[in-house]
Length: 226
Image (cartoon, rainbow, N blue to C red; front, top):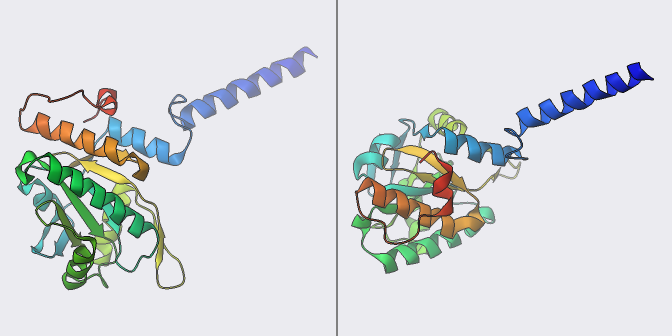
């Protein structure tokens, strides 16, 4: 009886320790939650992936993003997508309207959509796609990584999952990625958290430009890592 109770206690302790390790001391319960926590605790540098797009000559992604010293809200799309990317496009349209109402492009936040279907999504196709969404290049830019190997590395670095669906398209996860003015991925937000993502990006932009806060600091900023 005593031996059985002791074995059960050991199993319980092992299970608790395993759960604590898998969930970062019970702070997260999903792989996506773990990804968000890890990014917040350890920002991810943007790789020097060559990109081009409408009005963007071929150049390293990290250099292009850091060139203007602006904070970026980024998503990953492909123009043939008829489901998730359309939802992302709608979210970015709303974010663009908020940015346009709140100031000028020099205020420090921009939107960036990156195509992972570089072989198909030429700069010309991206330009047409952007026009269809009403994207203003002063606020919202589109680029693609034309090299498949470089694209795969970029997706791996940002933990964006892209899987061919067998019908010429892709299944992929979706999120709003916030990159600071130093070119680092510092936060990952759910698509439904668009307001929180933009508020946090604006908070980072004010910090980068040394401006005094104009409102309350977003709660997410208090969790460190930015």
